[in-house]
Length: 255
Image (cartoon, rainbow, N blue to C red; front, top):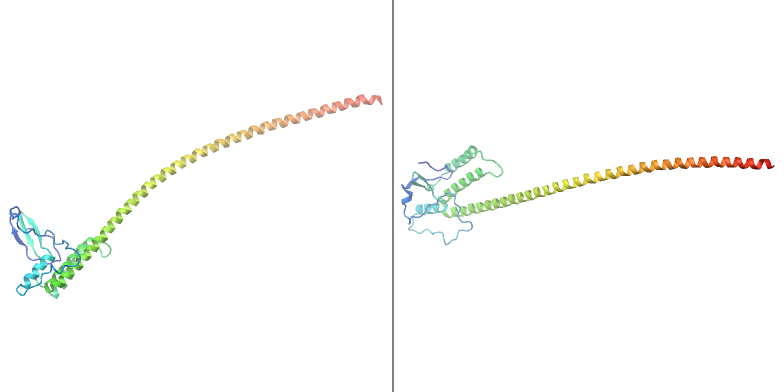
């Protein structure tokens, strides 16, 4: 027989229920599969709470309440069904001290984180709280049922926070994917604008080259025209001097 994983919740000695699970009667009451099964959260209806009668054995009633609050755990080994119920033995002060020592030891052995979110720490404290519920229920069933409501409310709150966390992570992932897609579009747009910029720079350089060539050609043409104009002016001046000299030569003998 391989017993289930050790737990801070105290259990009785395992009991063999059936040697062949396939031959169980279909009318047999199914057993709870998990000791950590959550009971419905919220107030416990007073109509469902059994009021102890004078003829009911208090020990038996406590066992029934314990089995309802903390269902037995069962496992199959070599076609043999084993069941293990929570202990109905009252606890002493030394048991509580031992529980605290076991809790600290398991937290250290399983390397649970002291702060932040830690599933290991949460599991161990949940087992410790179930053990406290067991101890209190044995002494006072009503107090144990009230602690059960507190436990279920805490678990429901944690489940709500977990759902909120998962939805926020999913929302963050969607935003990250959208940002990544937008980043790709922006990078593609930047590449297009850079290509357009290079093309415009090439056109500017071509226009500058054309402008410089036109300026150079116009400067050469202006220099040629200025030189030609200067030569014509010099020619006209010489011609004027010659004509003036001839005119003076014609006029002078008449005097």
